[in-house]
Structure formats: structure tokens, C-alpha cells
Image (cartoon, rainbow, N blue to C red; front, side, top):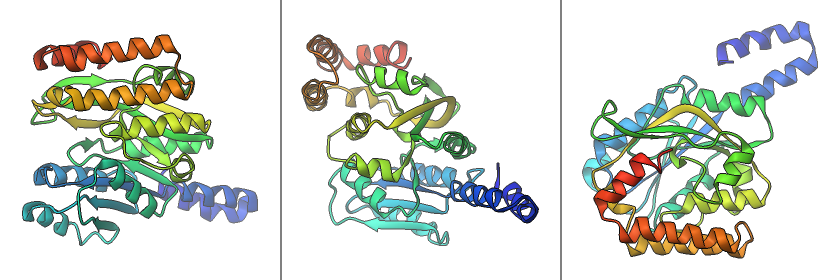
Length: 300
């Protein structure tokens, strides 16, 4: 239901009575949402422009966009953000030093004024109806805490698609999948701020800030959902698969699996299987082999 229809129904509510009036007020409230993004010095200014622009041109527009500037940035990137200052609902927060994505998102969530918060990455492009579809999910099921969706991955331009990722759709399937791999495409999620704060908000966990948050939300009995629809076109560089390997990346993955085992989210057998699989993909394989595995198997 869009805003014009809601206002029309609101007018008719004088005839329909108080209960319907209150329902319509609640529906209007559920159309309000914030966008939370983080930018840092390595971001490409053109990519950042396209990302923010895609969120400003949603079929149901956000009434707040929170952009956390994670440390000093070059003038070219500052100029892009300055260009959006005419948009009065864009809020920029400058951090003195780069402390990582987890810290930046934690601050962004705290600043966001709305209960519903849409995550967005600084180099991706959201489809125009992304947020409308997610808002509809929250309208249909008030018990939902997080709603994500599918992605396509492209190099250079959106038409040059190299992979896609569809996550499990139902609450039960997402939580089962979380025992193996992350069950959300992070850049697609919209969540309830109150539920994220209840789970401790974003915390520092290099490469896995989101996965760590979802695991803690599972322990809070939060309800999840994914849409099969593609919500975001994700920009990937030729070095993406190189960044998905190496000892630093593996250490982050290992410690997260250890956390899951210690919290009894997974058993010893699953812990061993997960760690060995990650060791082979992230340490043993070459970048080319890793790229093939991701595109053929890990994007399903």
C-alpha cells in the first residue's frame, strides 16, 4: 500500500471508525524507515554516488539516510557527499579515524531515528522497489525482525552479471543454514532497530560483523525472512575472491565457528566440517580456484 492510498483510506476512516483509523496510522508509521551506510577512503566516488542515488529513488523513499564516514576521506569522495546536502534527510557522521565496518554500523544504527533500518553498501545498486517489498513483509508479519533478499553480482556494469546468490527463505531454513554459512546477503537486509539493539548491536568481528549479529539475534529468538526477489545488484572487483582468502580472513572465520561451538549453536562434528572446509577454500586454494568454487557452488 503506497502513501497516496493510505491518505485516501485515512480520509475514509471518519466513516469507518476509530479502530480502522488507528490501523492506518500504524501503516503510515511502518512506511517510515532509515538507510544506514558506511563509507571510507578506499570507496570509489562514482560508486558511492550511484549507491546513495539508488536509495533516494526507491518507490517508497526513506525519510532518513545515515552515512557514517569511517575516518578521513579524499576530497573527491567528500565532494560526492557534499552534493547530497540539498537532501535535508541525509545525515553524515564524520569519525576521526577508521575503526572498521562494525564500529561504523553500530554508530549508524544508534543514530537512526526510525524503527526500521535498511542496510546498504557504498558500492552497490538497489533495485527501485527493494524497500517497498521489504516494508510489505513487515506489514504482513509484525513478528519479523530481519528481512533480506537475493543479489546479483556484477563487474564494472550491472549488465555484466557474473554470479547470483539466493539465500534460504523461511525462518527455519535460514536458521538451519546459519549453522553452515551466513543466511543473509548483508547489503539487502532491513531490520528492526529495537531487535538489533536487544542483541547487542553491530560489534567488531572483522569480515563477519553481520554473521555475528544474526547469530546473537537467533539466540534472542528473532524471526527471519528472505525474499527470493533480487533486491540489490552487488559490485564485485576482480580481487574479491583474493579478499575471501588468506590467514587473516581464515582466522576471523575460525573464531566465529569457535563461538558457535561454544554457544552450542553447532556441535563438534559440524565445527570440524566447517573449519576444514574453510581452510581448504581460504588457505589451500589459489585465487582462481577459489573464484570457481564461489561462482559454481557457494553462490547457490
